[in-house]
Image (tube, rainbow, N blue to C red; front, top):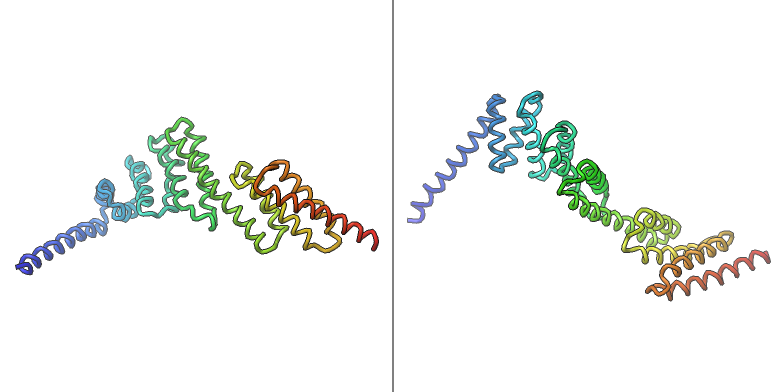
Length: 273
């Protein structure tokens, strides 16, 4: 009995699916721009973004001057977003915002352009071009729409993305340090402090700068040791002035003392040479 009722039901479902696909294909291949556009709108309303996108692509370039162009371009961008084509979504939302400057949808499109780039932002260990683009676009949005209800969200996302860039910068400095490229580590960490002075990692960054500058001196040729020990002393003193009771203070005091001794020894050696 199960087989008797099962097969007709299955065949009915297959027929229904085939019929739906057939209607879509008939529209897609009809060459009727009016039918294609209206059907794309209907698919969009039903949240069938992939089919709506397929149909929009057939007519989107023919709508210049058409009263429905604004609606079509906006939904076309949304289709890219909902199908997770974030790079194209960002492009089309930005294009919409720049083209339809008087549209009531412009504010949302400008925000979605930035948010699409935000969706592209990868782990901090990878290239952060998308994060930088998103930050730039969120800032543009805030400048264009300072009274928007989305401003607070934009600022929150900017902070999140900047934190990711901080983590990327810190990881680069740490990598140089781990590879014993101490001069590059110091430069990298100095850049981090310049770009992100409010970073929660500032204390550790200054600790690593002091430590890397000392190790750089230790591993330098004799002619450069005295100068680099002096730089190490300066870095250690700078740290201790800012964090006299910090968790790294005791170690930094020891490093500074060793740097001062090292500098005296090298100067004496060079003087007697």
